[in-house]
Image (cartoon, rainbow, N blue to C red; front, side, top):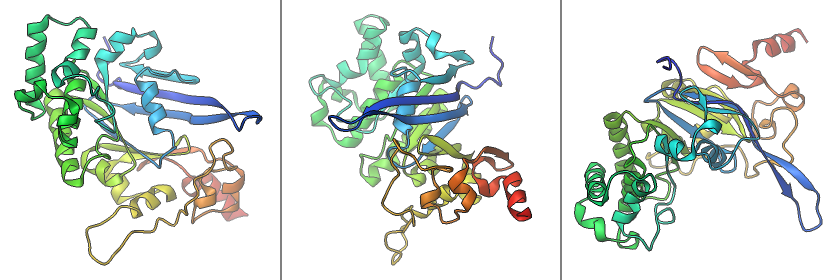
Length: 330
């Protein structure tokens, strides 16, 4: 029996490296998509994972779903490595909700077939009991049973995402990996889906890993936030701590990039520039230093350590007391 303090989901020093060939006659080079990621999710938590496109968020989702294996490190569910889990058993416990509900739903299948597919794959019940489960979960996500015979093309974006949520929850999983589940939707529909995800979490005691590039969306749903940059977690904090006491320069830049409804402010400037670093040839020292407004010479030469502070975890020389003491002495 696992201790109640055991995280339901844990990553321990997870690294994922791909080999990429540059050009027809170019040499193969390693691309480190994840670089020593360590995270914990407690039961009923919502961990918001934020960062720019290309930082490794979706790679992490694939590893957690068992679609890819880490190059090194471990992923544990209830303290047990998922490498030892049966693939079907893992799917019972962890389900995904993807970004684009249209491309993630089979256009040739009816809504009933789409939602019932996990039940058929896992040989759960007979046709009558499966249909009842499908009707029940449709009701839970706020769709009428008359859509059972519809096809995805006959439904709106918000309705399709509700179907995707129903498909993920029909197995009653414990963990749901939400990979940008609202980014393809209109703003008005986004709020409906976010409210629905919050209600479902409370009703079914779900644990979410909520992947997004939008901190405003994460603030609405998450209990903790982890900020990723170039395959590393540079800051982790509670939602309150992240939005009240942001520490890392990159997290501050992301917060400043959030659009506000105030007239006259225009589009915010993050002061990060347009160039995202090449992950095949990352910058020396702190990978963020070429875009950092608070850069110093040590940032260019030495990678920062992960610091445990009263505000959470942070990977930045500005908050490393040892480094700052040496700079003062110098």
